[in-house]
Length: 194
Image (cartoon, rainbow, N blue to C red; front, side, top):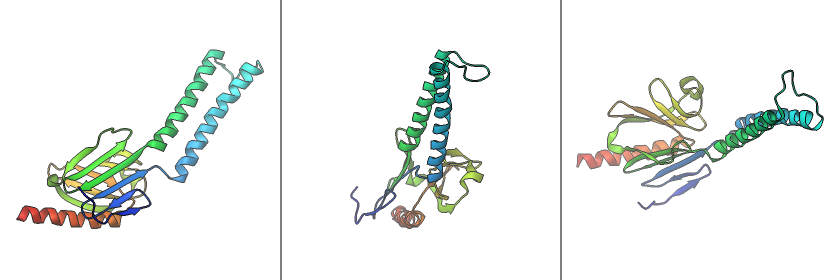
């Protein structure tokens, strides 16, 4: 489907007459500081342990591991930190909305896009929400009433389906998303009424 008069926005948001596309990544400074602190601390402690036990020949800790155990544990900590950084570097939420419906994917946990047909949407609204209070944080989260897909911020598109399932999709562009949904849903209702 061709996009007419697309407008590209900084945070990977593409809107046009027939398409809304938003891609969000984990870019919060506090998150990267926390990840860096955890990595430096864990790798630093085990690195010091290897230096002390293998180079200096002194035991590391009150109940020291074997040299092999210390090397394996250190390697696992390094790999775990690399995996954690990779998860947050490459992890993203992609939401695409067009005349067919809402397609979404939270990579790397969902490799394929999932789809909600426009005809299945009973109600929608762009809402302000509390990620911590309502969902316990960001990511793919399960609340009391719905499933949330969010990366940052506190604004999202909440949809209620005809089967009573509810979803919340985080957005960094609530005004653009609200305007697009109003136009799209009006066109959808006009087509049904004809």
